[in-house]
Figure 1 (cartoon, rainbow, N blue to C red):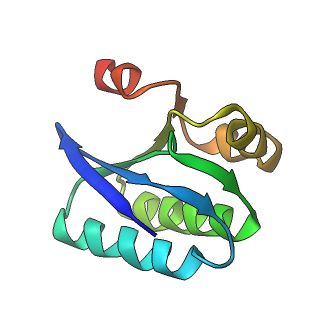
Figure 2 (figure 1 turned 30 degrees about the horizontal axis):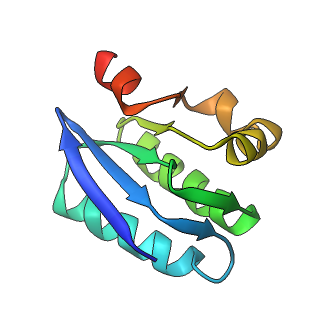
Figure 3 (figure 1 turned 30 degrees about the vertical axis):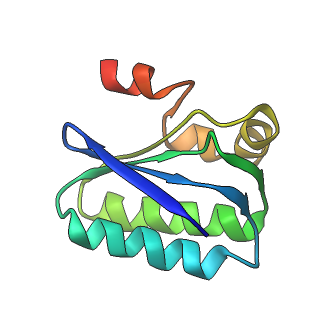
Length: 110
């Protein structure tokens, strides 16, 4: 699993590529946690533009990071999900607990 990252203000933007399924859930979790440790005190935005599919394992990692950040009063958001991924986020209830932006530009304006 390849994770690209950059900072926008106080937000760490992490961009996974490919499918977020059971086969990559653990490396995805480890990679995100490692980047969060390298950037303490940053909010997190997952840029899902390059994610073509997500299953319950990928959702579990996302929800776990949300819970971890919320416990420290940091914010988490998602941006640029493709339509099939956005639909899964809607059905799973993720969009009810964290903001989902259509683009990084929309996130930067917040």
